[in-house]
Structure formats: C-alpha cells, structure tokens
Image (cartoon, rainbow, N blue to C red; front, side, top):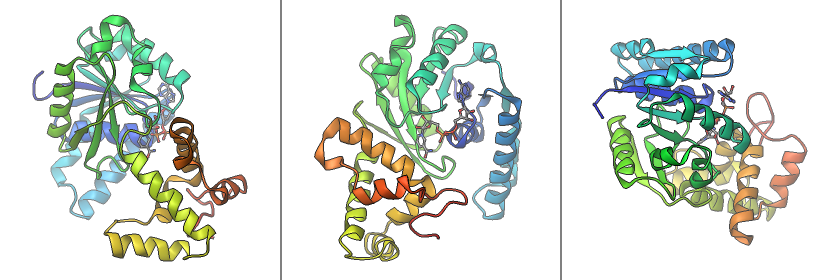
Length: 283
Ligand SMILES: NC(=O)c1ccc[n+]([C@@H]2O[C@H](COP(=O)([O-])OP(=O)(O)OC[C@H]3O[C@@H](n4cnc5c(N)ncnc54)[C@H](O)[C@@H]3O)[C@@H](O)[C@H]2O)c1
C-alpha cells in the first residue's frame, strides 16, 4: 500500500469526522459518508472549527487547513469503489453496523481493508457481516475522543484477520501520528476495562461519603497525574454512555463491573451530563 491512499470513513459524527481529519492531515484523500447532506455539512463545519481553534492554540499549522480539501463528503457508498481502507464509525448498534458492512463489502475493492471503531461489539461478530473472502481484511481500530488530539489506537484483530493486515494497519496508524497497541478481541478491549474499574470505584467513594466528586477529580489529577477526573469525564461523555458500557462489561465479566446504584439512579433521574444537562460537576 502506498504511503498516501484513498481512505474512507462511514459515519460523520463525533468520532468519524475526526478520524477522517487525521487521515487527511496525514496526506490521505478521504471519502466521508453519512446518511444526509445536512450531517455532512455539519461535520465539515465542525472540522473547520477544530482546525481554526487548533491553529489559534498552536496545535495545527496554517498549512493544515489544506487537509479539509482532501475530505470528500458523500451520501453514496458507491463512491467507496476506489478505497484502500475504510473505517466505520456509525451508531453503536450491531444491526446498523451489519447493514453498513454488507454495503461496504459490495462497493469496496476486494483488497480494501475494513476497520470498525466499535467500542463494545466483538470484531469477530462484525467480521461475519462481510463475505468470507473479506474477513481476513476486517479489523478493529478503536480511537479515543477527541481523535485529533488523543494519540492512542487499540488495534484489534478478529478471529479471521490476516496477520499481514494487522501489521499494515499498525503501520497506517503510526503514519497517522498515532500510537497503535495490539489488543485481543475481548469485551471493552483494554482501555475501557481499566477506565470503568476506576469509574465504578469513584462512584462508590461518593456513595460512602468518603469524598465529593470534585475532590475525587482533584485527587486523580493532582495525585495520579490524570488530565481529567472520572466525574469530569463522565459529564463530558455522559453518565448514560458510561452506564451502558458497564452493563455490557458486567454481562461479560460479572461482579467486578456491576454498575453502582448511585450511577443508575442518576441516569434514571436524567442527571447525565453532556450538552446543557446537569451532571456530577455541574448543576
Ligand atoms: N464517542 C466516543 O467517545 C467513542 C469512542 C470510541 C469509539 N466510539 C464508537 O464510535 C462509533 C461512533 O460513535 P460516535 O460517538 O461518533 O457517534 P455519533 O452518534 O456522534 O455519530 C454516528 C454517526 O453515524 C451516522 N450514521 C448512523 N447510521 C449510519 C449509516 N447507516 N450510514 C452512514 N452513517 C450513519 C449518524 O448520522 C452519525 O452522524 C460507535 O461505534 C461508538 O461506540 C465512540
């Protein structure tokens, strides 16, 4: 595979649009697909704002604006016929993803690599949505938000993934300026397993009146060197998403991932954080 390629991204939401941006910043041409023109317009506006803000903060150079011109938005997956690698970042639903993979399998060249950014669905299960011939070229690439700033990618081979494809994808991720690590296809991969152990214990500390959410965030930042405390992180990503992840891991691993009653109660009460909603740290 040449150093620059025609890449594709399906889903222009929070993750997909920035995955498209990091491919484009690395010099690749990118087709960015979503279901509506409105979603694509909003994604491109958001990316322009990310570049503007990044330049103002010294994170991006003026020349990085050209990356936006390398992203071609489309609502038609037939345009993916020239893609060498496609990353899927649609809703976290097996059904929705299955339909996307069946379409991609039809439209993409036989040697195109298909990668999923799923957080929770086993890669081997998703690989079964493409034909047998493609399964060796199907893999998980799990990015972290905000993708343009977080260097880690968990690279997850499924049962059928060809070892050469794993090496190729590790190389592509490195060339994007990311730090890829290879992870086995287990529920929650590695990072979410580590993160939710911390989050569950953080909520338990609040339940036991050991400390306030604010002080626990301070403890993690000033005592452990974390850039963000667990409650700030729950507010940013929403407590409902956090609960959903813990329920999936509780199902897979049992007691150690049982969500705390206080988290469940707060989600039921709508205190989930996110844009304009009260959370742990904001009224
Ligand atoms: N949000 C995170 O921090 C995070 C981190 C790692 C991985 N992920 C995973 O990334 C994926 C995307 O998450 P997100 O937070 O970007 O979601 P999001 O809701 O912001 O974006 C999903 C996008 O997919 C589009 N979409 C849905 N169905 C589609 C289809 N059939 N064809 C084309 N586009 C379609 C939607 O219109 C939307 O723009 C999920 O699998 C999620 O689990 C999310």
